[in-house]
Length: 111
Length: 113
Image (cartoon, rainbow over all chains, first blue to last red; front, side, top):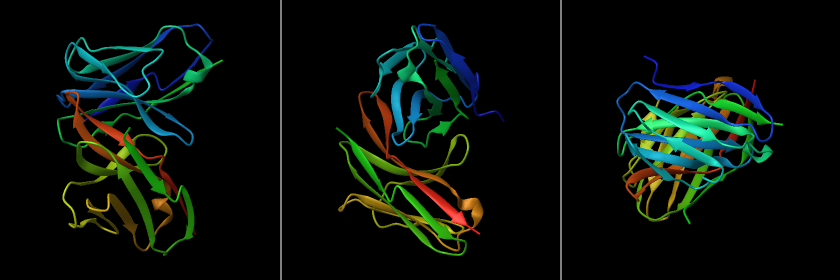
C-alpha cells in the first residue's frame, strides 16, 4: 500500500538548471497538491489540481510549473532553478472534504 | 488573506507532563480544522474537526474546536519521548474549485526523558 510516492528523495542542482519532481498516488484521489516547507514558514501551497488535465496556482506559484496528464501523477517542474527554491517539497492527495495524505518529501538544494 | 497562527512555536517538557497546543485562525469559507504530526518526513493526520464543541480523542491525544472564538487546542497527556515532533494545524477552506489547506507554522514539541 504505497499511498503517495515522491521521487527523487534528494537532489542538488546548480542555479539555472531545470528538473521535474514526480508525485504518484495509488488511492484514486481527484485532488493533488504541491507544497514547499521552509524553516519557520510552515507549508505553503505552490500549485494544485482538481482532476486530470486541470491545474491551478496556489500561494507561491512563481518559478514553478505543473502538469497532471494522468489522474495518479502530478509533476512539479523548475525551469530555471534559483537558490530561493532550496526547500523541502511535499506532495499530497485527497478526495473532496477529506484529510490530505502526504508523501515523504523531496529535499532540494540549489547551489 | 487566510491566516493560521499556532502557539507556542516551540515547547520543551518532561516525560509524563501534559501539554496544550494552540491554533487560532482567520479564514474565509471555513470547512474544517486539521491537526497533523510531523516527525522526520511526511505530516501524518491526527484529527479533523468540523463541529464546534465536540472533542475528538485518540489515546492520549485529544482536540476540540471553538468556531465562535476561531481556535482549536490539541492536548497530549502523559507525554512520551515518541511524542516529540512538529505539530501542524491547518484549516481546510473551499473556493476556487478546490479544497485548500492553510497551515500554521507549527509547534515544535520536545519531550525530555
